Length: 121
Length: 137
Image (cartoon, rainbow over all chains, first blue to last red; front, side, top):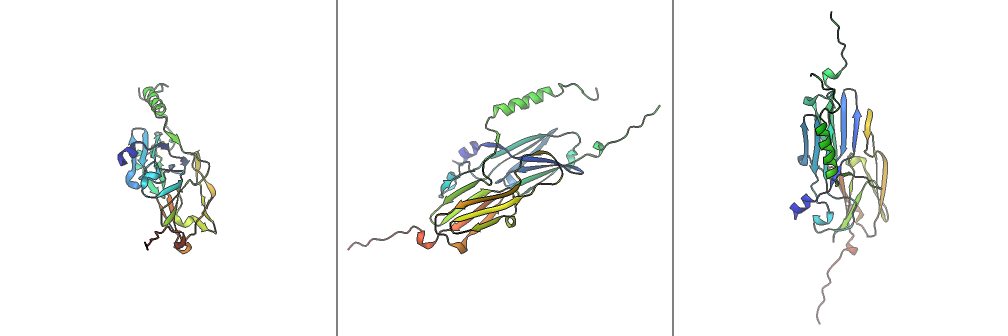
């Protein structure tokens, strides 16, 4: 049963804020129900892929002996892809999961800060 | 060539992504009318109210139990900086759940895990189902 429910979890694009701060960007995602060990963040070349499955089944009725009278949410699979620009320092990307929110911090690379090019004869 | 200015640079990859998006129609964003979304369930001993409130600590959520209603209240504060994209809800929220059972008021408890709040409302003794034994005479 549990295998089958895992397969049929609906996929959602989590609601996301992208904010530019002084020294970098921050991506904030709403991922309620996602535990730290179920979260996967992959970075390949220019793509940052955030995905994870909630620990509970899609239909809460499958959870056990409780009787549900009103249902508005259930388990799901979160997945969202971001394309990074070259201004982001890939080595310094960090992430923090807190109260169902994922913060990904993308610091700007040194070389992305504007630089004047000297002209030589 | 040091820099590729061709507009079709990485064209295949972009087309691939576009097709991926369309081939999985189940991927959609979650938008609901009421915030926070609530599930209500019960068993013999308790009534449970679960809701998804990402981004708040338990001390920032105000839970009030009145005569026949449970109120969940709080405020989601937006972050600081220049927004490129804003999809997450922010601002004050307030949701009322009506409760039709007698509740053991002093034993109500709430816990928050990974942005999911679960309130346990124990039913009062007099409304719990009980087995009545019938003695044959």
